[in-house]
Image (tube, rainbow, N blue to C red; front, side):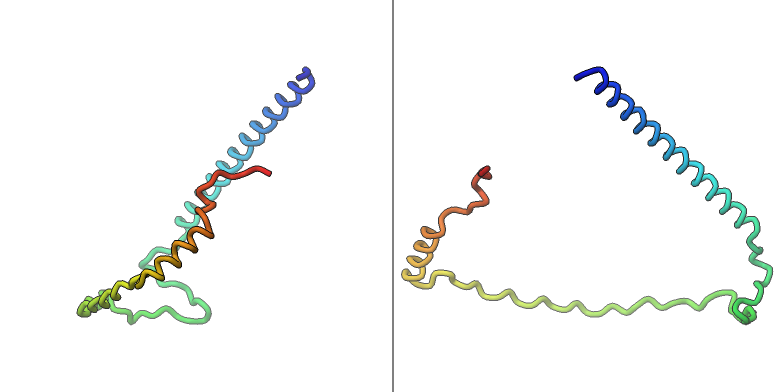
Length: 120
């Protein structure tokens, strides 16, 4: 490698690090501004005791109960019994079925997924 290549790579690395630092600082400033904005909004929010202004032409409802009625827990439903397991099927009912399976396995051969990848 020549000196110009090393200089180029070094400048590229320094540029990348500087870019990363600038992005982090910008994100940090944006986060601080967002927190300050939220704090301002919380200070400017009306107190809970004060009635709200008309929203979309509606007046606030003053007839809401102070305490909500207790909620009944849902009733439990009896457990549904599981379906019985299906009876096991015999794959090879006769010797002829077993012979056919052996022939098919011989023709198809072993699984190619177990073989190493060949580069062509």
